[in-house]
Amino acid sequence: MGRDDITNPKTKNIRLYVKRVFISDDFDGELFPRYLSFVKGVVDSNDLPLNVSREILQESRIVRIMRKRLVRKTFDMILGISMSENKGDYETFWENFGKHLKLGCIEDRENHKRLAPLLRFFSSQSEDEMISLDEYVENMKAEQKDIYYLAADSVSSARNTPFLERLLEKDLEVLYLVDPIDEVAIQSLKSYKEKNFVDISKEDLDLGDKNEEKEKVTKEEFSRTCDWIKKRLGEKVANVQISNRLSSSPCVLVSGKFGWSANMERLMKAQTVGDTSTLEFMKGRRVFEINPEHPIIRELNAAFKSNPDDEDALRAIDLLYDAALVSSGYTPDNPAQLSGKIYEMMGMAISGKWSTFDSQQSASQPPQTETLEAEVVEPVEAGSQK
Image (cartoon, rainbow, N blue to C red; front, side):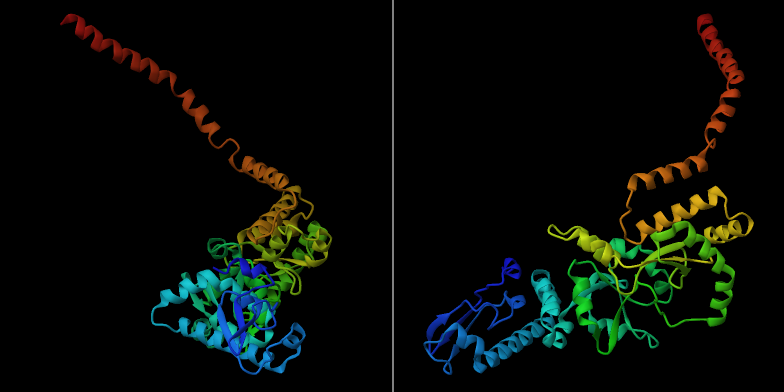
């Protein structure tokens, strides 16, 4: 019930009576906001004239007061469900009308304080059961200043993304935004209880554990390697820099601070009536971050120092970029070319590994065959003697 009303600007969920005389149920958002269209009700007023017109409804101070009270009463009612002892009640409500409340975060800035406590999300520490923002804030570390989130198409893809590696090591909780509307809703809220929302897939991530001396030494060692990688990748990336969010992956591709994230880029490409001309403009800058402690990056650093023009090293950089593109949630521009690179690397890795073993085995088989023939003849002769 009410799911179709979220796309219909004209909802007839509230019926207005004046002195028990029905006036109208078509208000076009003047009496009740569109995102609360799933709430049905009757309003009876003694303060409005019986010959009320649309102009009076739009300009009347009484109608404005009525709207505020109706919205406030609705939020109190929803809050009562969320605080119920039976958690299943609000889970059922959220499953049916959660998208409406997220739409409210985008459309109704005045009621952000009422809407935010009602939101529910999965997180890195609660993948099976949704949590509220209040529960997230309660679980925050003492030194944690921001609320971290990651937008993805599912919980499983969010769980396996390289962006999480260092945060999971530090036991920092991350919200998973798996609904298409989630990212826009959170960006509209901006903050909750003086804690800013931070997208961990964007550049300049601050985890509060900077070691300036170590960073300085690492930058001095890898700065020229970063320039070498940037020269190879060219316009594909805006910059190549040392990462502070990786622990087991060699590299990751992060989006610019003010551009679309990989998830938002994927959603905008899928729009039926989207404008493709704005995609290039809104894509923003992509930053290629490398993990200086990973063996692959150390080998590339050694390759640059010994022979920066080595074809194998340059091909490895291209394959690293394509792998980071996929693992970071982006769509490769040429999937067939990426497959060709993977097949080429597989061919180099497994070339002659099993065929050599088979040839050695076949060379040793003839003497065994002669022995087996002699053994087969003996039981036949024994049988004939019997």
